[in-house]
Structure formats: C-alpha cells, structure tokens
Picture 1 (cartoon, rainbow, N blue to C red):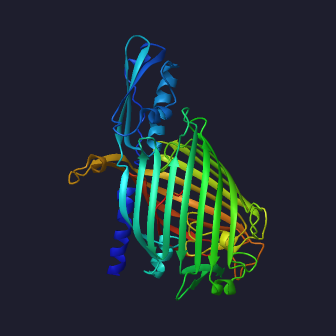
Picture 2 (tube, one colour):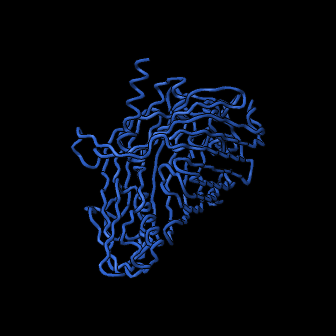
Picture 3 (cartoon, rainbow, N blue to C red):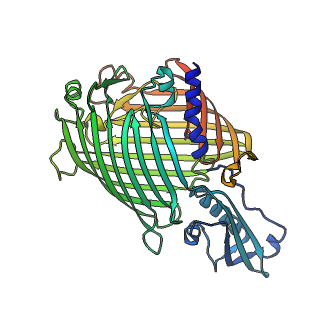
Length: 476
C-alpha cells in the first residue's frame, strides 16, 4: 500500500509542475469610460514579452491600431483578447489596461508574465487505459520512463519543438516540430512529426469488454514507424483548418497473428500504408484548460490507405466533436458535449479499431471496461457549482516568479453520460456494444496553473456498479 501511495505522488508531481492557469478576470471599466460614446485605439504597448515576438501577441488581439469602437464593444474586445492571449498557453498572466489620451484616442497597455518555456524532465508515467485501471491492478511493469525535452515558444514565435526518448512498457523515440506561421500574414503553418515505437505486451483483442493481453518473452510483440506532415490554415482568431499526410509501417510477432489474424488485417505480419486527413476546429471557449462559457467544434475526416501501397487498409473515419458551455447564474455553470465516430467500412484491422474506454474517449463509470466497435456516439452533460472561486496564491519558498504565483479553483458537479457503440463484427462477449449505456455521479474538480485539472468522481453505471475514480483532464 505504501508503495502504491508513493508511486501515486511521484506520478502526479510532473503534472503539477509542468501542466495554464484558469483565472480570467474581465477587463475593468473606470469612471471615464462613458464620458464619450466611443474609443479610438491610437497605440498598443506590450510589456513583459522578453521572449515572445510582438507579432505573435498582436495576432491574438481582436482589435488593431486605428479601430474605433463603441464603449460596450471596446470592453468586449479587450476581454476577448485577454482570453485569447491566455489560451495560447504562452503566458501565466495577462492584463490589459487602457488610458485616454484625449476625448477619443486611447492607448492600450498589455502586461504579460511569460511562462517557463524549456523543460527537460524525466518521463515517469502509467501506460494504461486510465489511472483507475492501473490502480486496480497495480501492475508496475506498465511504467514508462525516459526523458522528454520540450521547447515551447521556440524562437519566440509560438513554435514547439519536442524530442522524446522513452523506455519501459513502451519504447518510443519521437521528434515533433510545430510551426504555427510560415507566412508574413500569420495564417499558414506547418507541422512535422516522426516516431518509432515498440512494445513487448499488447492488447490483441477484447473479451467480455476487457482487453486480452499478450506478452512476448523474447522479442517485440509490435513495432511501429510513422511520420507525417500537416499544413494548418488559421484565417482568423477562432477557426483552424488542417490537412495532412501520414505514413505508418507496422509489424507484429507471429504469435500475435495466431491470436488475432486480423490484428493488421488479412493475416499479415507486416503492413504499411499512407493516410490523409482534414481537420476543422472552431474554438470559442473562454479557456481551453477548463471552459465555463463558449463553444468548441471539431470535424475530422481521415482516410486510412490511399492505394499507393499494397495494403488491406482502406476505410475512413468521420469524427464530430461538439462542446457547449453556459453560465446559468453567478457561480453556476452547465456543460454538454457530443462526440461521434462513423466508419465507412466494418473491415478494419484491430490495430485501427474504434472503441470506447481507450484514453479520454470514454464514458464515466465504465473505467474498467472497453467497448470495441466501428461506430460510436457519446454524450455528456454536467452542471457545476463554483465551490471555491478562482483565487491567487504565492509560494514564497519557490524563488522563480514563473512558478511561485499560481491560481486555483474548485468546482462541485453533477454529471450524466450516455453512449452507444455499434459492433458489426461481433467481438467475443462484447455485451456492452449495440446497447445504450449510461453513467452518472458527482465530481470535485481542482483547477490550477500550467493547465492542471484533477478530477475526483464518484460514479455509477446502469448495472449499479460504482466507485471513486480519478482523472487528469477536463470532463467536457
């Protein structure tokens, strides 16, 4: 027990250190605001951007020098611009002030506190569907360790360069370079990625809605080599389009093929294929970390297999993800979401099989289950009460300014989830498929700086099974 508790704290500390702050105060008005009916922006001064280039900051503003705005629009634009700056994850704090130069002309002053951008930290993480599954079994062999080097805001241009060397349950070498803007107009960007993965133990199928595991005694059970390139187009503040091309090379051990001849499709030991995708995001949330107000929409269409290489892989996934957030009254909020996946073919290699219970694509109260299938619908709803309003605290023991001042908040919530997974293949004992599933419960969410969310939930599914579960991402 002591070993498990010690491990839990070792695992959560990196999240507390490396994972934006949620607190977003509206831009304050003063008595001179209504002295005149409009404001003309005559200049913008930025303070605190020691690393971040000025054009990156100006790109997030919904106003520019020369704009003339009504008083109401003026405050609304400043407040929205503040949210945009915080949602870049480049700054711990952002403050926008203004001063009248004359009866109309207004000077804008933006004061920023930049984050720490370079991290060289050890990897020590669980390789499981979720923390709760691991905690039930306490399988310490499912631990990844290694080193991750990340430079956010590389060159002060909001670029991100990441290199990973990981060992343990999954051996992984990964390099990714994200360049948000490659043109002067700051609308077109490009991403590059490369990774090599291998593991000795894999889930080769499912039975009774639990994973069937195979562990190799002397060689890799599966290997994957992949690379990709994506072009991103952000014409305005809130909308981003992306198209990309990916390459995958997969190989498995003969024992895996014997257990599941469809793991790679067509009884193959090796397969390679290209994929093409289109992705559309519309993001109007007040905070990407833990939204309370706004809307998020994501449409993703991905074609696996382009008939460039000989491969049995040839199908597409169409995925729609919608989220909506409302403020009901002071300290009361409502959130709802829908996420659906439709496959164009039931003939999918198990490696690419859709399903619920993997990663964050899950229904609450079903943490110990997986539901394999081809088509999925998942809805979530949660009402939240702001138990502790966003507040500031300072840790005097930490001498670094970028870490010693943080903000935090607590939310108490009631939630319910509904899900339906269509399985047209017939996985053995996949009894949760082709039937409506639902879960409900209460939650306590802790939100703090560097994008940290810790959820503690008591939930119950339709079979009456219940438990206390912990998660580390926003529920909706």
